[in-house]
Length: 400
Image (cartoon, rainbow, N blue to C red; front, side, top):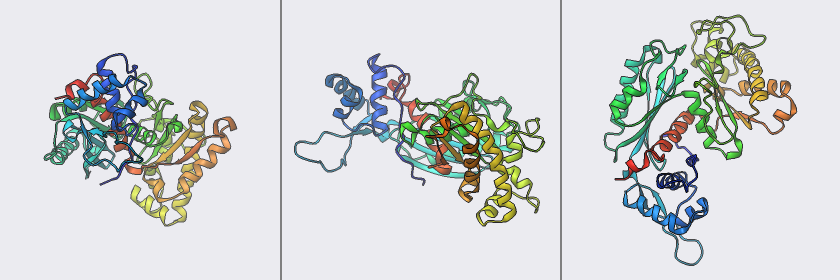
């Protein structure tokens, strides 16, 4: 199974003194993220009175959402060590599905971020929602069959634009048959818990940001794969969706100097159509070629593949340089399987960004590959799911 770092969970947006549910949510999230491990830690982290914290912790213990850590680390120094707290495995779990064009990572995570089960399944997103979601549902049922506690939330990411409020994709270019399909509604009926539908690159961006120090936000995540997508994380470490959920959908920006190739969206010269891994595959001499062929050839230094990757990197760099000026991120992360196969993509994007962007926008900029790789989406979904399960509006339902 993949090993994920402990991810930062943000406190509820309201101050912790504004109600018992918000207080319970705040304490549970601090413990779940590793920011606190005892009542004394919680007092320091929240600035609240010891009695207030102690009473709330007792309520969480009585409701079996928290438990005492049976295997605490050895004490340091003299005196009686503080009782260590953790989220109870019986408090429930979060279901995670990170769908790509040709497969999906599926996982079950408890509320303390422990990865309980994981699998990767082959499925073609272009086959449509019913066959793909049939595979997702069956695989998740199998994963959680012997696990304790109920499902408290589910998060599913798909490679296309989504309406997060309605829980359905909106005219996704590489997902025929998915437009307006009620993904969240279907999965909510199946697993009897809240379901959040997200764009897959948004999940990667969130996972990456929450695995890093807080000063690495704002963060821009750029995924180069079958298509090209982007995700934006604010200075506060939250996803920036925009007014209707399309923020970060950079794949259909027309890039200066690119060829006039028609995109699947119907426009001409989109960065996705001219510089994605699938676009590179379409330009290899031996046809038909796949993204796997591009990765293999680039990894082995094939001169044609390397040239095509460098050309794509220059075009992507033009787009990223514009976004760096506009958004001024602290960090730009380049993801997708092509980055693991060769350094050419990252090097080419870096060269253009530092040439085109002004010094004020780049003097502290970190431009690098993903620290979590293919599991960044699982991390982002874990964050969303646990924060939803431990939200003020849900946490009292979690107490048994």
